[in-house]
Amino acid sequence: MDYNQTDYNVIPNLEDTLEFEDNPDQRTPCVLLLDTSYSMAGEPILELNQGLKIFKQTLMEDSLARRRVEVSVLTFGGQVDLVQDFVTADQFNPPTLHASGGTPMGEAIDRALDRVAMRKTLYAQAGVPKTLPWVFLITDGAPTDDWQRAAERVRRNSDTGEMALFAVGVQGADMHTLGQIAAPNRPPVKLAGLQFRELFAWLSQSLRQVSRSTAGVQVALPPPKDWAEGWGQV
Amino acid sequence: MMNWLCTGVSVQGHGHVRQGMPCQDAQGWAQVNDTLILACADGAGSAAHAEWGSTLAVDKVVAHMISHAVGWRMAKDPEDHQAYLLGTLKGAFQSARDALTTLAAREQVALRDLATTLLLAVVSDGYTAAAQVGDGAIVCSVGGHEGIKALTTPFQGQYINEAVFITQENYTDYLQLQAIEGSARHLALFSDGFEPVAIKYATGEPNPVLFEGLFQFMNDTSSQEVRTEAVTRLLTGKRIAERSDDDKTLVLATRCNEFNEGCPS
Image (cartoon, rainbow over all chains, first blue to last red; front, side):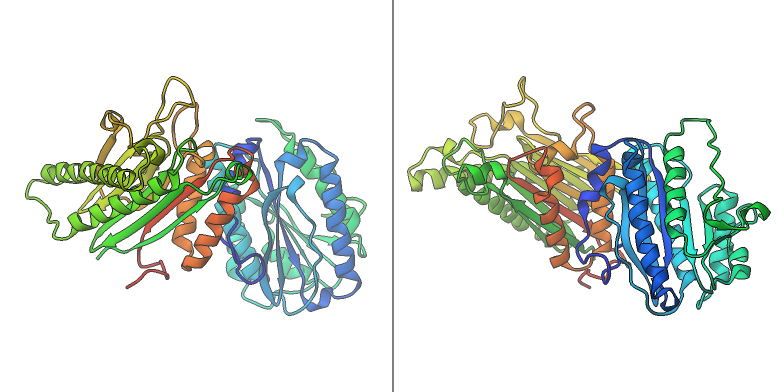
């Protein structure tokens, strides 16, 4: 178990080991990898927090998604914090995030991929089916740490189907670097304005669809038309 | 030198709180040289002084194992050592029962007023051995890809509410004894209050997700205080409370390796 003793909880929550007893449903894991660096201060972080609330609401409207979609929140603002370990949507309390510090994106990605790998091991032990884990990266800046190694890992993990990373750049984001981090078949998307609410509504709708999927059935995701800038071109 | 991280917690079930009964579970552990000793006991809810019985039984078996562990030597024939271990476990149970008999006479109560289950595990010289009378179970992991193994299983009578205790005349008829080759890497002993989440009733197998998680936690958590608090929260938490209102005991042990920061050197 990976518990950040400074930001999450000093005492590991061992009840996590029992959640598959209560709910053996298939899981759709999603890591929200959120930039909370200083440049997000003000309106962007407020809108991001609103977006998280809508994310929760939209998932809760779906009786299957709330048992199947698992949410984890990692933030990177000065340091990488595990704000929320994986929980099913019904257990998810949207955090109120604050902005400060630099943008250790490389470390954050690394940590997210570790979390995903550990979670998948747990699913396997529990005999719980899963869909492809999503790592949803949202940033308005450029990494202030070594991101190349993380980018290579993203590439490898995408190729082997370990997970899928989606990158969204908010105004001011270094889209060029994001393009090098994201896998070529999933290029980064630029957020129109501060449309976090639309973005999270879309993400939760997509997760709802995926969480309903059964063996061998491919789900076509809706295009992110109402929040992405220039989606038609990518 | 083999070192161990051990954490044991007994909590009062809310059934006991409601009825004004004390926690009647007990647990203890010891390490002597390379030998690890773990014990727990669950005093019968129907017995007037069950908490005396469980506490004394744990103290006695641990003391017995300590005194016999001193000077243990690997026998030339490993089979001998296994037989010796099992014999010592048996002796420990008898010494616990004798102590209960003495206590009952001194306090002028019936022996059945001290009725308790008893679970005992030992890791010594390349063997892992366990003994048990009554409910609860002992599980271990020897590491590698072998997974989680049950060394003992909860007593199963014809009906779920049947129970056996070491205070019974014929307790040896119900004594489970088991030894396996190999030093366990992780061990867990628990009383029946923890069974609903720990054992899959359909198959009798230990819950692998739970124990993998608990053993990983032991491995990763260097502070004894944090471990004790985390296990206490688990045992008093709502997920288990929904399944059992009995007292609950869990004893966990993990062998130190070079990565455990909290291990004594």
